[in-house]
Image (cartoon, rainbow, N blue to C red; front, side):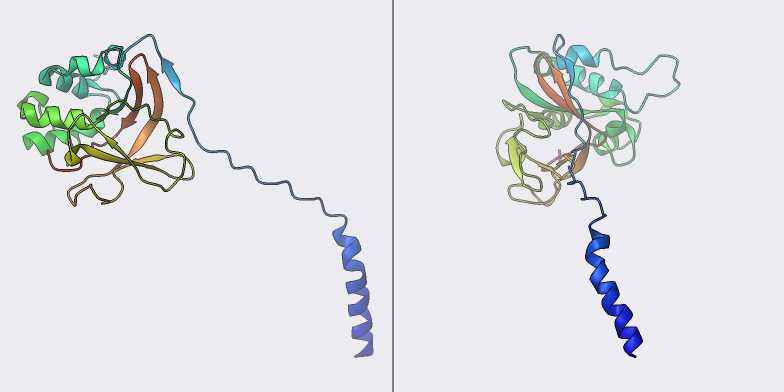
Length: 218
């Protein structure tokens, strides 16, 4: 018993000396997963979209291009909303995947997954597109979304509470759109997450969505 205690006290005596040989742990620095802003400041959003059509060699649209959005903008007469260089707006750009997958835009507005776009009611489609434009705001992942987990409300081109939209970023700076039913968002709101952040143009900044969002049904 005494022998065991002797070795125990020897071990305790030398532990501080052993610990002195350990390297001091470097402080952890969190690097947010923000994307560098891609700059197309010599082009409006509309001009840039013309370069983002699916190659003619494909038998189907490229899901990450904007063929359906281009057609929808022309059909609803909203070209100028995407093309005025005097504007300073935030655009939530809907790629092809936001239109032609199950329970996406085309099925919602036409009853068919594949559309076509021009089978949709023009007024409903225009309201949907205008809901994805935040007026008089220039929103990046960081400014004005400074506090992660906080709710930031903005007004889209649709007037009143029905046109309110909620943005919230997480600790890695991924931005969610309408992530929860928080007044004035309704129980029919539809949420999504930004796929590509921070594309800068002559008339504002844009973020790309794989799915559409809403407050009330269009």
